Length: 357
Ligand code: SF4
Ligand code: SF4
Ligand code: SF4
Image (cartoon, rainbow, N blue to C red; front, side, top):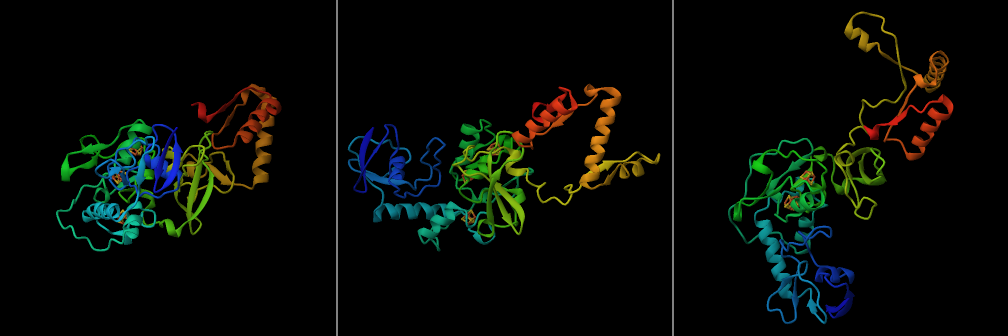
């Protein structure tokens, strides 16, 4: 363990901790944009600079390791001036269209600009303008809003192991690119969107549906598979408009494409609300045949029908002529009951589950 002093307060942390880790242990706020606790540090945004006794210049707290007896200062007029200048430089080439940005109210850059009181910008210069938009089904990329923090690249590489994106070009022309600048074609897990501290990455389905201040958050579990990831549904006017996951959950905030973007069925008008019973075809016309395939029924009628048919098939052809297929969308308890029903009531081991396909 290592003991150091931060802003006059002593703290003991594990060896190989960073100064930022130690400051956070003391709940001392240090602004960051590129830092993420699950990613390797890069010191890219330069906002977490601190002064350390015996080190001539400010250093980034996210990259410097603690040492015994170290004395750290996290704030001073000098540090705050440097931080403000860094923010001004970032914002000098930023669209600043918070009024129509999907991430307004949930944007670290906007929050820092607010706290540092940046309204006017004294740095005028060339601006990045990108006309090409990425055509992909889930992720809206607005490269003008990118501050090149690198979080998306690292999460895709270090956590997802996909490496679908990286830094391309150099200097002012640097941008986050896919290989050969083709449209994004990846796992669409959306982790990059989740860690982006600005509006450079958002969900295509979120556009103009409502921003963070407009929504009610409802915690629930993902219905897609047995992993049981925790989800937060963002609900506006009784409609699920976005899904996220908090970092202090069993899945640590990570989701797959289905969990993050596959929520359209919840409010879909095509969703079945009543049982349907398949009817015998009455016509040789194909269109008429398909439109007459199902008719709506009450639950009592549907369940009576299922019981009657299962009994008659079992009586005529034996229990092994029946098979049961269950679903990963059911709970463990429901799946347990289903296999019990197929084995104990129907009398066959013909039971399977879609997660095995
Ligand atoms: S990314 Fe943030 S700062 Fe930039 S326009 Fe959107 S809300 Fe405003
Ligand atoms: S959606 Fe997932 S796989 Fe695709 S770029 Fe983002 S992090 Fe990588
Ligand atoms: S897209 Fe977002 S996460 Fe990626 S580098 Fe730009 S600002 Fe950072």
